[in-house]
Image 1 (tube, rainbow, N blue to C red):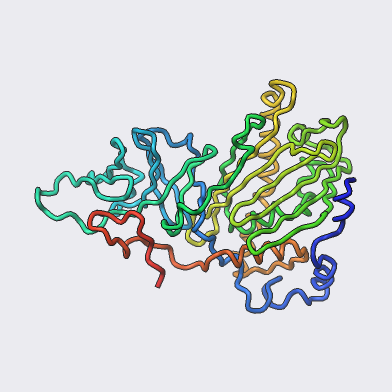
Image 2 (image 1 turned 60 degrees about the vertical axis):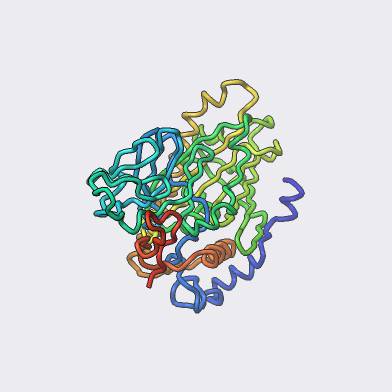
Length: 403
């Protein structure tokens, strides 16, 4: 075991006190599980819209095509113009509210399928075919969202458009590296995004994956917190059992000559999450994972999971290509098990009407605090109808605040 592992064994601020408090009830100050008196139920906290969120794969949006997506109840029509640029408009025609995602792309404009109103990529109305010459145009168009493409994903900025330029996209050097190959995931999971953060960060649930990973003893080496992040380090020690072949290929077993424990670092840096696995015998990461959990519905009980799994290529040419289907099968099996668990947690919350969790792991209490304090209150579904100051559009206008 490394010196770092020995130094951090059992670390993590207040771990022993937190566990004792959970047993004798002192951690839990309220009737709703582990929430302290006065704390808002995390499952009623919305994600902060002032970040870049992936909403589609770039490859799924070919030229002159349009598709529907959403962010926290805001329906968005994505389309790629003839020149290759991607645009994002609120998914409703200003005329009769018919979804623009049912429309037709003509050059760089999007034409509604109903009365053929046409919109530019900035949300302004460019044409109403039957409007008499000289007649005034309607007072507003539709909202346009800032859009960027990176890492094979389409990102939108659903919050204050004035903050978009100064807000960086995630920085993922492995995704741009020729030494790595990236596997992409996009799945809908029926749960609040916070359950997904907890699931990945709390590696004490490896019993769930015993049929895929064999028996694993995850040892918490330590963790660090800040106002917007929690980072935990684990030592994964194999202790027998049958393991999916893809698991060994992904973690580069044998790179150092034998199967050895992995040091796994997981970080929630609001609102994204990362995981990195480093075999103890190697010292370099076998793979890295970046994930974003994008709420789809207004109540934020359904999330679209976007993941980029960046795997270091082995020295043997073509080896990763051969292993790819096995790695994909393994990751799908693990994801299916995790989805089962977090969706069960959401169902329990729905049935009970509150968070009745009795959490004993201080690390999870800390990440809940980060998610709670960086989030926003959940309210009615936003609307863009009330704020459209421009005569021929409302590009960049923010939705009116819920009353």
